[in-house]
Amino acid sequence: MDKFTTLTGVAAPMPLVNIDTDMIIPKQFLKTIQRTGLGKNLFDEMRYDDAGHEIPDFVLNQPAYRNAQILIAGDNFGCGSSREHAPWALADFGIKAIISTSYADIFYNNCFKNGMLPIVLPQAQVDILMEDARKGENARIAIDLEAQTVTSADGQVFTFELDPFKKHCLLNGLDDIGLTLEKAASIDAFEALATQARPWV
Image (spheres, one colour):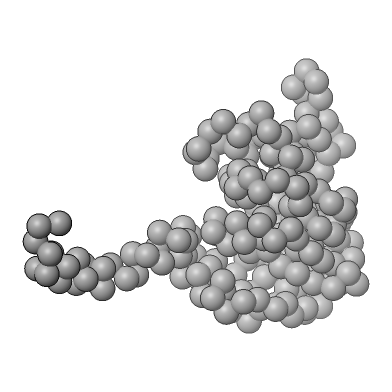
C-alpha cells in the first residue's frame, strides 16, 4: 500500500447526503475479488445512461474533475452494505481522500485499509471546501496528514482529528498484511521455538 503524507489536488464536489455503497459501486460489479478495474464503474448509475454513454452533467464526467483526487461529500457518506469494493472503486478511479461531516463506520475503516484518507470536518468547513471544489481545476485543496490539516484554495486552514494508529498506518503505507509483516522476525522466532518444543506437529 502506498504511503499517504501530503496531497494537493483537484476536489470534486458531491453534496448529496447518504451516498451509499450501492451508489458508489452497484451490486452487479461485485463479482470480482480484484482491487483494480472498478474505477470505470464508480458511481456507474449516475455516470452513465442506459446505453452506456456518459451523462455530461455528472461531476466526474466533467473535464475539470476527471482527474480529481479528493471528494467533498455530503453527510453519511458510504452508508449501506459493507462492501469493500466501494473503497476499491474510489481508489482505482484515483480518489485518495474524502472530506465529509460523517461516514458509515465500516466504509470509514475500509478506507484506511485501502490507503485512502476519510476526513471528518464540521459542516461549516465542509461547505467552504465544497464551494472551493465548485471552482474547478484551478482551485486546489491541500491535505497534510502529519499536521492533520486541510488548506482551502484561498489559504484557510482546517484541523481534523484522527486516530493515531490509523494515522501511523497511512503514513507508513501499512495495510493488515503490512502490519503482520512488521512482526515477521517475532513470528519466525516463535515458530522456531514451537518446532523445537513440539517436533511432532
